[in-house]
Length: 216
Image 1 (cartoon, rainbow, N blue to C red):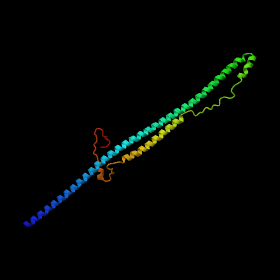
Image 2 (cartoon, rainbow, N blue to C red):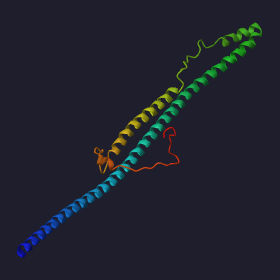
Image 3 (cartoon, rainbow, N blue to C red):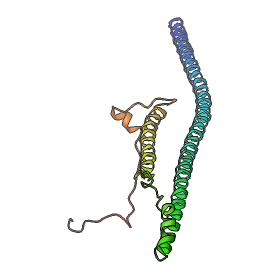
Image 4 (cartoon, one colour):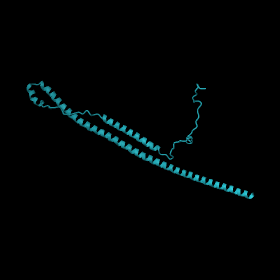
């Protein structure tokens, strides 16, 4: 009996030792797996931060270039309008000066004619030849009705609207792509246990809670 008792005790001890050894190996393996996940997660966080900073820097550069490009376009349109205004006004003022000069000559002839009408016939006949030399036709000047820049303003407003719509659509696309970048992808919960992970306890304030007095 004592011999068999000793044999049984050794066997149980060995089994216990084997179980402890197996448990330690499992724990060690589990710890190693967690350590690996921790290292991977840390590396992912570092990479995520570097990538985000690079994206911000590149976005700032691109938006700055875009702003500069819009500023150049604004300056070009402004200068184009100024140049056209200057050329059109200069040409119109040149014709205006010619018309005013012709008007002055005609006013002088009119005054001279009025003066000779009251003079003697001989004097009138002598000056009639010079007074009769008048322009045959009025100056052939066609004044355009398209002298307003309203259409230009409409075109610029249309450009702004197109840019705003384009930027709005592109920002939505960029926002969607940014939101899809996750270090740990979000998995939509499906089971009760998964939903319970996001549970949150809440309490009601008795001072603000609505009491239905109609019900007991």
